Image 1 (cartoon, chains in turn yellow, purple):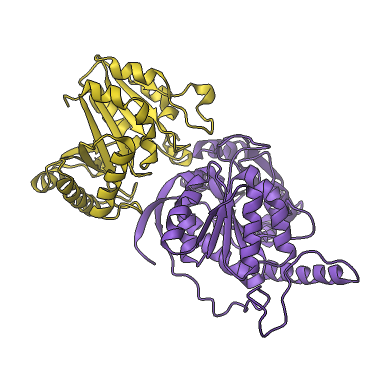
Image 2 (cartoon, rainbow over the protein chains, first blue to last red):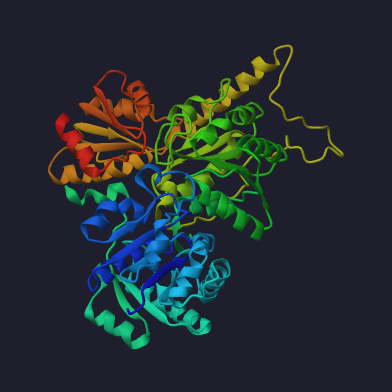
Length: 232
Length: 350
């Protein structure tokens, strides 16, 4: 991953925050300075800003609205994001809000991102979500996001899952459609996410044999409060 | 049953309404239910049905009154403060005996509160936030699947009894994603004809839809009609679930998001050999008083868990009728119980 800025966008509920969080942890393994910016102005719950301590413990800079307004019912983008984009020491993960409207905040920093050149604009897709049930839905989303953000997507991430009910057949079907969408958009399929509980050697080989995208094992960090019962 | 989707509760509410034959949706945005309004703005137009983002919550509920008066299946949705604004219209719907579905994805209160999940609107939903003697059939789902199922039933029962019904969820249920499969819509063939609707009076005597009944004994008689309808709903539509109640020394009572942690707590405590069960009202009006009365004969203690300062606990006390102590565990303002918190509290009581 020689790029510096990684933008995670996609339909509402496609798994952007979960994948972006995992990606920031992945980057941290090879780099001292990693930041994740919560750019979500759409969703009021399950946001990376809710994980302040989580990121601090792992040495990742979280750029998010200050605590006193982080539950405010209005779109807030933190000004320090601009400085982070310009700071070549940092690998920066931008966790966008859902749909095309979720990429609106990119407008204020688009020129700086493009000036640095060095970026990936990922489109994340989950085939189990209502508006990306097939290749056409994914392409439509990519087009909408490009129109709104004025940044051309550079790669697709296949993130088809059904939470704890995800199975391998589902992941294969998702990868097929993402792969076809990527081909038609003339961009690569960068990753196929596999939740850690399904990640094993033979399945990795199956995926590697059929798709160009790398397997990206996904640990799940965002839960409902009652799912956190494991601490008993 | 169709194929399986991964959906937010708010989206599932919308799709289920469409499958149930919702002809018209009127709403005004408010967090944390916005995905429902957004979903309807997209899907209702695709279906060639009516979607209006109204200028206010008051306008939306009155548009529902109009559409329901014309015999159409109509729905509005909001979150707590917005539901408060709709109360006048809800009372009018009840007074005019109009079927309609109202969705409340509850957030913290009182007043504007915050956008966190809460269950502070239990009194408002079950005791009537508007004026007069009226009731709503109130569904209390605890999963995305139940949110979908309940919206479909809410439309059906509203038509069956000619009264407004409500699906009461909270911000967590609205925002979280779970697998969901949509049922086929219930056939309307057993439902009464909407011969009271304003469909154009050509060739028939005119219909009048109103809640104003001045003069004579009209309003007295009308209230007696409502009394009969509500008695019928109480006789037929009580819904609740029991988990491990048969030999429970301690019975938890919870609904919605709060019940999710209670289910986890019952499983954990049972595995530890402790006799704990759960009664989970699926509909909170009419209320399962009899189930609690029966449970009070075998259970020594009750613990009610709510995301508020104690509202449903009143109904539990009515049902238990002094036969066993009823304790309360709950906080307002964004608190959602964890399994551990419920287990710890139960252990203190055992």
